[in-house]
Image 1: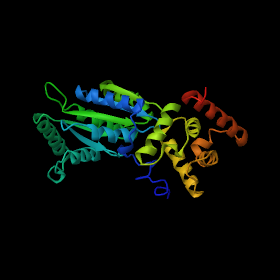
Image 2 (image 1 turned 90 degrees about the vertical axis):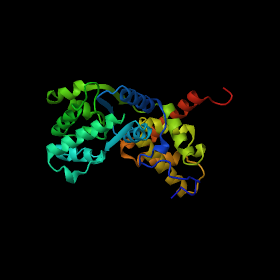
Image 3 (image 1 turned 90 degrees about the horizontal axis):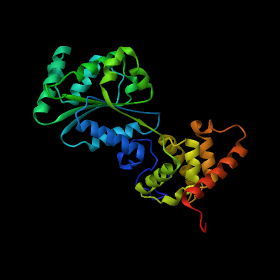
Length: 300
């Protein structure tokens, strides 16, 4: 692979949500601030939604790493759980011995006791659920029951939901209106602007130990157009670009590498009309013009 060829310490555009590559752009930075502010105020439910590929899982992991010792993070990456499975998974995250509390009621009591013990230690449990749009109605009801656990002054548990826009649709259903009314803080992740894509690509290249010049600013502007600023698509296209450049032994990426990578990526290819040559020339011209406008042409 191209890692050694371009002197990377690790692959810059891997789809694995590696927090070392967290790029503090406005949407993710703002979302993190909203969550941390809500947690500091001991609010019950917090919701973050975003389209596929906008970096929710990376943000989720960044949040876990960012929490102070005051918080006990319980992370559930798999929401395809029945209420009993959800209860067991949560208990495991809290360090409760499941074998001693096999009955559902006993396990629920053990969870409450553990949360009370944490509160007495001056710590706060936070249940973080990724892909929350896949939670069943019964699982959502279990979360509501968890959220009822409280002292006279504060909640014993805070719940952060990360999900696709379908989560909003699910929560609009009258059967879960009690949960919807308890969501005090929400944030919707947007895609990146052209300038943010430029910074994002440069950041990942240099964080991996490579040169920011591997993919030029004009190419980055083009990538921003065809991916519409979706981080996952940017990663996929950039990875394919570097593969093609490496295959030809090139020290930097070219338009040919970039265009081939775009047409090899379905979600980008679908955004272009069948007359590929005309579209390529048009978008390339727009990309170059955008780059000159954003970053300034020499002598202008």
